[in-house]
Length: 445
Ligand code: XLS
Ligand code: NI
Ligand code: NI
Image (cartoon, rainbow, N blue to C red; front, side, top):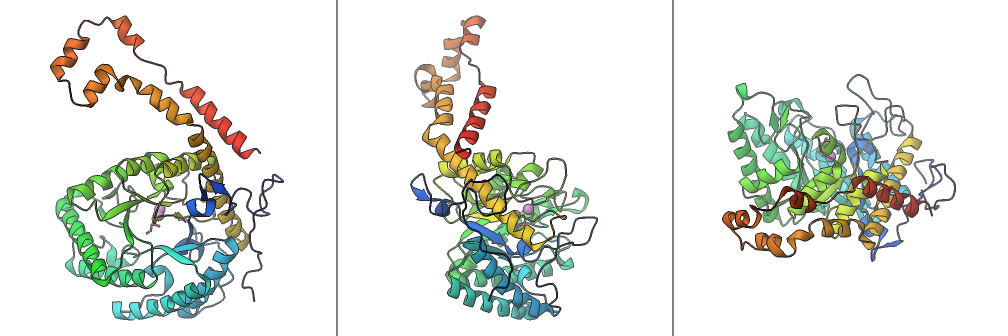
């Protein structure tokens, strides 16, 4: 028996312009760059949005209408939602899901009681996973929702709260092992500060670094081998988040010797908030060898907070997929829809349509990116742009053969005219038009 009235979403191809009949681009078995599309695009449903999100905004109550709304007992509802989740995954043809501990079950009065509630839901999840073959991309722990985390979890200035956080993560790692989570994510919800007037920033950062090492030690102790991921985000909810962006997070990992333990989980909307493009964040991680996973959402350039919109920007998806392909794929990572429909898209149909749009956007981006790579469009431009470093003085510089003095001897008498001649136009407008042409011609077929 079906819980949802909606049908299974199928690939219908590009016939017809109006969306809503099925996937136009997400064709799981289509071969892209030697692999099935579904292998490149390990999509994941985010429990906190898809199952829990009421579509609130800072000024208004939730508008979401969900078929489980009439179940009033919290534990009963928590268990019922598991059935809905698995049917949703099946109907959307999504293989993975992701969750916070607190998404799944209500809290009790003590951590022991809370763990008991949670374990009942996990028991059911494990059963459903065995039955359906669906998998967990990552799980995580909410150290930010409950008022006890008012000043953070692992960076809280209160030792009892730090102890609580450790115990909570310990249990979450046990769950990660039980559900065979491919990754374990830490997003530092309130790990940051509001003002230096009352904050010992160094002490807080030392605490969280030690905390991360202890988490990894515990994972090793219980034989949990999933990839640890840190998720950067700036200025929300605290004014100064310790993991502001990819570069800051990498510097933190290196400062505390954690770069072999962690990779990064990068989110589109967080990139905007940090004043970067999404592809910039992914490139920073890739260059450091630390690209882990993607929270596939996007932001709104006109709104100053994390709106977690479902991806619909093909341009952005193309450039992010380009980085992913260049990195050889996401390995244990995937594309998690840390995304929710708009507050005015409150029906269950909208939830199906939003995921379809998100999956199609990344499938389309993947197709365009793969052609850009095949035709070496950007590679050729970049090879040519840096070619003066492939021989002569440039190569001598790169191989460390010349000193400052020798660079001076080489250049000191070269006239201005010659120097200008050695520069070249970046032809950016032409390049952007070429990119547009690739989008049109790849998707227009
Ligand atoms: C919030 C974050 C959060 C993490 C998981 O902005 O994106 O949803 O992905 O805690
Ligand atoms: Ni996220
Ligand atoms: Ni976010």
